[in-house]
View 1 (cartoon, rainbow, N blue to C red):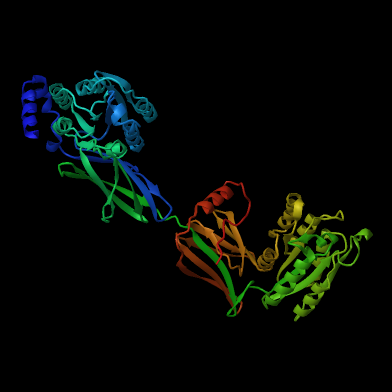
View 2 (view 1 turned 30 degrees about the vertical axis):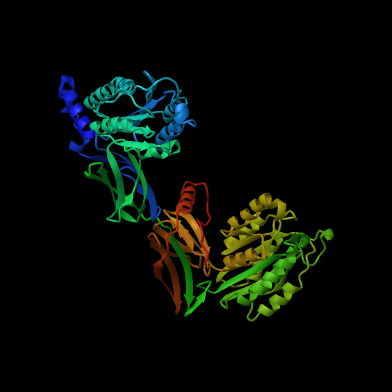
Length: 610
């Protein structure tokens, strides 16, 4: 049958001078070359999140160029569809194809309805929703005139089609039509460079012969279904530009099939750090192949982890120098307040007794309290006592003193700090005060001035805001200012575990990490929580006496331990590096940018736990 129809078409073509002239510039797809273009990602695409995936999208054609695609839906609206497709699966299928077209591809869609005549329901448009509305509102009345539908589509392509575009007519019908007029229309379509994809609902042998030949003659494909519920899948099965399949591969990997819809393709491919060569391979219905390739670079922007440690005479320490720390404990009446069902004082006593066992031997420790001897009604603003002075083997006395604390009085922070300055006596080593409090000054003193006086003597004040409660915002600002006045650290603790961690951080020698002279992170010796930092050059400054500085360079995935070692009075440092699994640095980069812009004065960028 097809041979007979082929001869008929050949005669028709030869008898049309116009068709004969234009056929040479619009050959059948079997005589043309497959073209394929990757449209997304772009050639300058790069990503910085380690191993990832990227969606590859593009367009492929065996019937013309791939720059543009102009697609006309020519939809049968004859009355017979009321019986053959009562639930209107034809519109559902066409709409499904429109929705599956790659959003990044430059495609215009138009709609023609035909029964005994052809009418333009939607001119060519890039607005997919306008095309969907036209397809959703198709009528069902009249007879079937394939030629009228094709002719209306050709007129729209001639009027609004773009030069150099691939032109496709999606022809759907459930019935037969005048053969000669349909074949004449196919010849005109071919001469205009338009491919006709045909879809038949029904089992008519004559109808299938007509539609199969129209598709074959213009380089298109033909699909036939008997069940209207199969129409949505059938529309997607039509290869609108003569391409049968597209596969995607990366760096020679096993090809993966891409999703095809209307000559567009899309698929996800995995990428690795470095250069990735993505290859899209198109195969036409006739078996011709063509490929397009793209290089995508993945920059490894994994975070690095930095930890700073110290060793003195072969053992880990929290200070390179002899370090004296006085803990000043708030024992004012407010410490009766509850936290987690227990009085804050009870929680603080338990933690202070606990940490006294594992504070390192190189730490010279003293204990002072305020508000512990005089009831608050007495308004005693000189209620501050040195419970245990600095000295050898004083851990057990510290534990006994802690056990005996009872919260009674006022909060004379300034007075306690002034008294603490005297407690160090003639000591000139690395000195610090760690103040644990749940409230602000209540005696009218100036704790900021007191902290500045301590700083002038080389003593920093580190402050732990413990269980601040509802006044957290106001109290935090006041307490943070005390620590800042001496160059100390301010840490909040809202639980027993947080208090324990805060004591660990503040009794050890602190250090800062600088990027271009801006402090971007801070920590303390002995901390078990490395800091996450973006790659780059940094300066680590240890706040010791005297201060010590060490430059470090971090590469992606570096897990760097910077160890300072003191032997016979001489300090040196060395680095130990290992590989960190890919860890996103997005939050750390954002935090650092905020700090560098001046929005933050000092804070750790991020931490990771063991």
